[in-house]
Image (tube, rainbow, N blue to C red; front, side, top):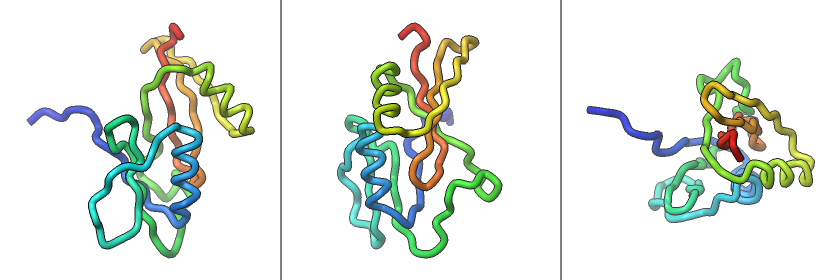
Length: 126
């Protein structure tokens, strides 16, 4: 066996509608087809790929504290960094930019409403 690319990330949340709105309006994803599971949720797509699976839960929200969670972040590759940073600034969203010349990328680090850390990797030459 040889592992390929990561297929998707599954995120549990107590605020499904807020998370759907964030992944739609901040990252430009869209809701797509999802099997008829016996629990609420949404699959957020990038193009034809369901990249983020949101699962609605009751109880403790799990706010993204890296002290309690095992997953520190997940990442996407993208193009259009200048436009993305301008969008984040216009919406007054916190982000941190980090240049990584060793691998020729610029990371834009952001956090969703539940506190999950995501970085978007852009080609440095953009």
